[in-house]
Length: 343
Ligand code: WQD
Image (tube, rainbow, N blue to C red; front, side):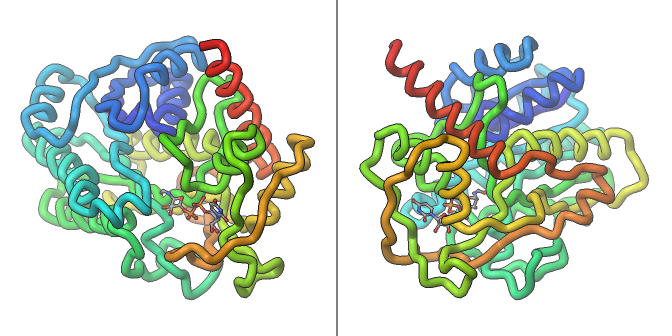
């Protein structure tokens, strides 16, 4: 059985679907602080299979202990559960350090107590690289001081894992550094569910086109890039989810590998904000209302991944295009509108 913490979140739910479709038994744990129980039914509709589900907070040591007591056949962990709003982390740093680090420590302590080889796949982020010195970004790139407590919790999480493994040869981990996940499952039964006004570009684009916002503000077009807007590596959420399955299979097969492995998960291609807008207008046939505003504090100019290590060692690469991701994001937004209308 695979424990998926935060399994009702955006990346967690898509990964749970891919795990179930691969035939894994899955236990989803989620405290519903940033997701809805409706996502559990969406997962079942998306793949016709049901995961086990426990609603609990991993911030309580006893909850984690009882979870492993009640489920004796956990063979691997994919740890998504975390708070992830960059802006909120600046105003509420202690909440972020507690939410994003305490559960990781409790999970590792339980695995140590069980004295069984239970690999943990850790959800990290390209944000640990800060403003990269060279592009594309490889896993050897220096980690920079994060520009937000959120980014710092990802970097500290990686260090906690490194120190824990150094002290306990039984532990093993695969760290996955995501670039920019976008889009929705092609069943349209699961997708991104931003709480409140989205901070991220793509859900803001689709909500604006749906009439939920008057216009999109492009945060600066005076950057040193070809069209002046920032460049990112936007990866289809389904490609990202599949990478978790291959990473987990690699650890479970006990293939010749280090016990501490790090992989960038992106497409290896960068796209500017204007290119994302163009892609959206092309696939949706909808003109987007936007205007240029001031730069956003903390934005890096350009970030896209060198994915050769994941290609080689995971045997994985992103297959879906920016247009396919934007089309799925738009169809998901239309589905949400129709669902809300019929409520
Ligand atoms: C992308 C581009 C903005 C909104 C964040 C997190 C990162 C990871 C992915 C979790 C930037 C521009 C955005 C808008 C805009 N999350 N933009 N107008 O900042 O690259 O990364 O999400 O792991 O940790 O930091 O993503 O979607 O916010 O921004 O012009 O209304 O879109 O300036 O250039 P980002 P984003």
